[in-house]
Amino acid sequence: MTSEFKKIAVVGSGTMGSGIAIVLAQAGIEVNLVDIEQRFLDHGYQNIDKFLKSRLKRGKLSEEEIYNLKSRIKPFLVLEEAVQDIQLVIEAITEEEAAKKNLFEKLETYCESDVIFATNTSAIKISELAAATKRLDKFVGMHFFNPPALMNLVEIISGNATSDKTMERILSLCELLGKTPVPSKESPGFIVNRLLWMFLNESYKLLEAGIAEKNHIDQAIKLGLNHPMGPFELSDYIGLDIMLEIGEYIKNQLGEKYEPAQLLREMVQQGKLGRKTKEGFYEY
Image (cartoon, rainbow, N blue to C red):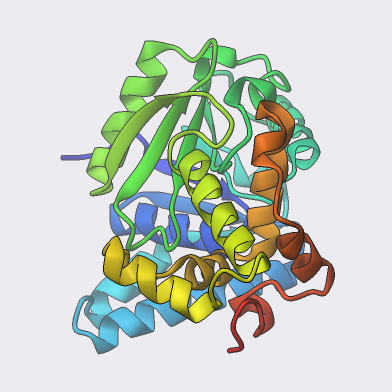
């Protein structure tokens, strides 16, 4: 099975962008990985190298496969150059609506009219982002989960004007990538993060109220619900700043019952963001 998407641009080389690039390259697709500064690209390539070395060590990939995979990922610092001769662009930048809209406005001027725009947003309504472009029918949510190379789920979210053809093409692409695509209509947080936010936020409130200690809550969830990680372990893995951004957006869209716990706000203010800062609910 070959892909109709021969070359795809991924904008943003962070954890998600670099991970998505690996997924695409593994499927034989050429990837133009673009970011605004060399240091961000360098860090993205470090993430790619670290993941591939771990796969080599475990016998999941050969040195030849890794060489071929890396040869398909090309770095770019100039957005206009990165989107030449592509069929799809996947946005994976910061979870800020204004920044995403600004990016899509630029992409609208740089890309051919038949290029599909996809956003990896974890919560923002697709139609709100699509409004920054003139291709509402070719705009779709393509929400990968961290780490993209290992997680099988991709939420595929249609906006108000996303065409059936666009949805079909993206669903087919996900299957080619070896992922399980789950279609969803747009709603703040879509499926997973809307439910996850309520679950995690209640965990923060339990801890805040002194009902139980964090390690005991994590243990109870892992043993009682058979989750691989407890809510505080998972929050540290995702990033507390990201969880707060998701919670704020969902609360603003759906009402006060989604209000983030004060404990989460305080930890973000203190710079305790989880694994990436070596301290969150736990120390690393």
